[in-house]
Length: 152
Image 1 (cartoon, helix red, strand yellow):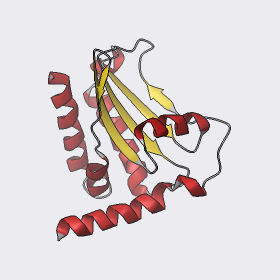
Image 2 (image 1 turned 90 degrees about the horizontal axis):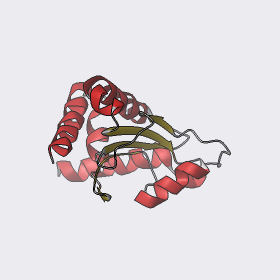
Image 3 (image 1 turned 120 degrees about the vertical axis):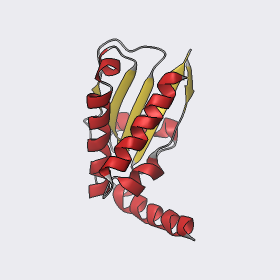
């Protein structure tokens, strides 16, 4: 029963946070990267997707994800083993990336690239379940996923 209620809440939040069909497209991109110029072909990418309208949970997912990557994985970030991107899917550039992953609302992906092959790890449910009131739990879950992928 709890899972059904959580799923319903996530669907409602998703609709209110980033329904891109009701948004106008901007000519400028707000896609940002916090990386070194050299990107390792065998890397982890932390991708946060958002639209123009963002709730507090959406903003926290971005903020806490960035803090985890920059504070706990600064060495890996500098040497290109980890890439952090914030992607606004209401822009043409962001929309193209979101289409690749079939993203239509705020989402958090932690993807691993190994020899050109990408494995996708969707952390969106974890983000929406914890980012508003459980900052430490959100950060711990994200750190654990990144560490797990670094060891593979």
